[in-house]
Structures are given as structure tokens and as C-alpha cells.
Image (cartoon, rainbow over all chains, first blue to last red; front, side, top):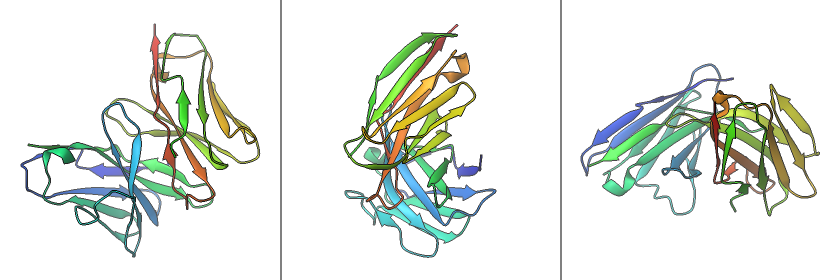
Length: 116
Length: 111
């Protein structure tokens, strides 16, 4: 299958700081990438859809000013958690859409964010 | 609306079979199955498109009943490596390519 690299895998930060997470498609061009949030033992909740060269589309209830998404190239999307607080602590996972026709998504390994 | 998976958890011994179900209240275009191990990325298993098809992947296969908007994942002669959380992701005509994931089914295979 196609490979998506996500970095960093784990980050610990102080409350009030900003954290950037990178998501790269290594062997395919992902015009669309998705950002998910996953709480322990729970499902993947879609936060936003990131389209190369345009503004991201956020799901209802997701603060766009808090979770900044940039998709500047066909292989890179970034999620910046601004002014992070303890309640933002979670597992964040990105995916790249490999097949437009079938909407097959390949996932990155995820980023564990802990805000102290 | 989130698809409903059943059962929530399954415990097996090596070699036993299991079935995981995924049901939706919406008319589906496709169903995607993923397996996630703790702390790792979900791994794509297979996709089933509208049309009631059945597909196989090693000893793991799946079916999609379009009339019932239900998909089932079949794991036969389970191996230790099958342990993990299985998610179904559904796509309907109004989802604009997005997937909505079920709550997951935890599968544990013991020696």
C-alpha cells in the first residue's frame, strides 16, 4: 500500500504553546488529506479535510483558528495546534487519499500530543 | 451519523473464526475496513463498493449487503497477528468523499 509519514510521533508541550504536525505522502500525490482526532479506545473523528492549494474544510465544532491546516504541496499537509491546552491532548492522525475514485485513504502513524 | 459495529469486543483462540458487522442508517456508496494496533496507524484492509460484492484478503474477507446497508468482515482461522481494533468506514452519497468510522471492534487472539 501507499505510505504516509507523520511527524513527530509524540510531542509534549506546555500550555499556551503551539505545536506543528507534519503529514507527508511519500510515494503518491495526495491532493486531499484528512486530519482525525482519536481519544483512547474511541473511533476516528474527522476534524478537517485539507485540499492542496485551497483552504481546509472543517467539521462542525472544530475551531479553525485553533487547528490551522496548511496544504501547500501535493505531498505535505500540516496541522498546527495553536495555544494548546490540556484538553487538546489527544492522538492526531492524518491520512492521504490515494484513489479519488474509490476514496481509499492511507494513514500516517499518528502523533500523540500531551499538553501539560 | 456514525455506523454501528458489533460486537464491541471479541476474544478468540488461534484458529477460530470471527465475524464483525457494520451497519448504517444511510444509503452507502462504499464500506472500508481498517485494522489498527495500539499506538499505530490504521491499516487499510479492503474496500467494498455498492453492488453487494464480496472480497477476500488472505484469510480475511468481507461482504456488503446494499439492501440492508450492512457490511460484514470475516476472519477465518485467526492468527495472533489479527489482534487489534477493526474499524469500518462508510461513505454515502452526501459525504463528499469523507469517511465516517464506526466505534471499532477490539479483537484479541490468544495462543
